[in-house]
Image (cartoon, rainbow, N blue to C red; front, side, top):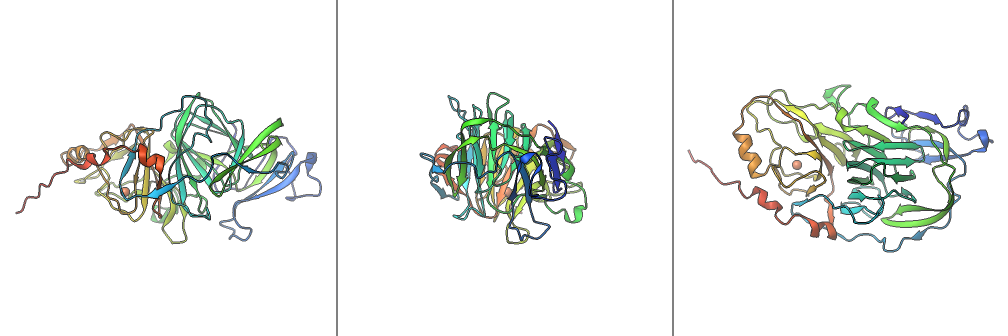
Length: 419
Ligand SMILES: [Fe+2]
């Protein structure tokens, strides 16, 4: 696949040479009788450093579609808050053919009725390619495959993503999720807040963590399919369906800085202590969606990749923790260094605001007995969606959570030795 390289850049791409207007955004007559359409990812007046928009040159403009009607049964899911720590086994695949969109299984959300802040966490278990097209007006889709590849056919071109890669589909961009493998499972965090971007690096300097050049952007590609087709919109927490007589993936050329992208998590430049103690897990932030409060994320996407542990006279697993932020974790492969058993690839956990969490008893007692030899954590790729607002959990997720999760800490015994 032919990708454009980088993030934060203004790109231009054309599937047919000469399709992109060279000197202006909307000339009276676009080359080859295409239609010009601007897609705005931020308010027109957002500061230049924040401003996101692309110009799409398409066979027909997006207005050429029918009336939206609510999809049956697609009302907002009931959710409720709980301070109890929750953990889940992998979401099982359905028996029959279910596409990516219809397989979305709501775990937790913390958005409000504006869908302009917070996020919605789901898993997907797709066993069939999508026949419809889809976009979300409610947020951008951060897709984290755990098993099987996805082919994301978008307005701006194709992205193929595999486990240990991620993709971000910005708000409003239309796509169809195809299945190169027979089935695919993973996680979706729909970010309703400010668009995800690379975190600031502060004293780390100009390089490190996720490097901009490792992000890949699709190049223009279009299809001319016609027929009785369907476009599904997610709007205000509900799914809506409209007829359309042509594929909305009909963009022949585009330019701008609002586009989908993918990133290979194995390229993350991991930074950690070389003396003692831990930096906080924010050192592993791949992408962040800032809130209105400085330094406080609406959403941080954080990973725990393979890495060397070299800290001296230090308890190396993640420390016991209570956090004003709320943490949803998932595991893409291998094992996570805070848990011996019970947290397996495809599973998840939720530790809401101020709910205590940390290594299970087995991991704790092994770690306090270990030595200072450098150790490489090899077979692992865990991640966290961390948000400043507590999550509400879906009824289905609350019912399907492991019943014995809290038992993993029961073996931590009081052994205080008064001097
Ligand atoms: Fe934590």
